[in-house]
Length: 168
Image 1: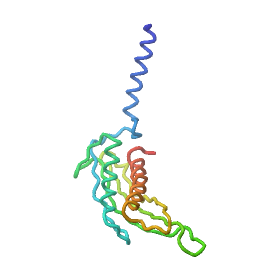
Image 2: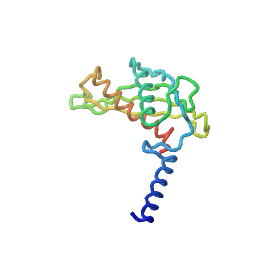
Image 3: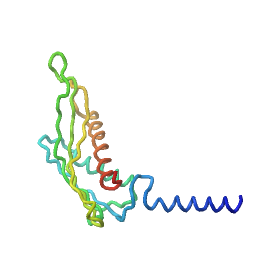
Image 4: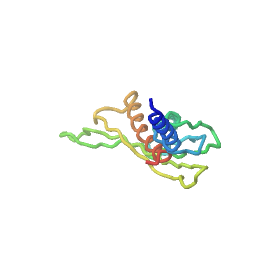
């Protein structure tokens, strides 16, 4: 290799690694924080489905741990996620010819308060909601319910991540 080619290669490598301090492969920008905490999300919805609050709290923790190098802590976190599940409802979406629900929609809404102790301008309070459609003649229990909740939470937690860390 000529000296010029080696120099161009070296500059390219340095530029690549320097740019990673502002943007990385997970989609997060530069984060001054080292720790995060996800406080337990209470279920305050009128219709209570047992266990969905624990599932949501764990889903949000897992997503942030998997997509960042932040450390999870129980208290004193640089980034704090808290809130409550505000809505859990099933509603018919389409009727059949004999006036029965042909399709039903499960909707879950979560109110999130995000606090960045290092940069207060990033703080927000926002409602997130998503849905899962299933055949109207079926009951949403057991594995079907787990699939529905996981699908909804995957979308909601990713939206929270994008708003709080990725800034998309």
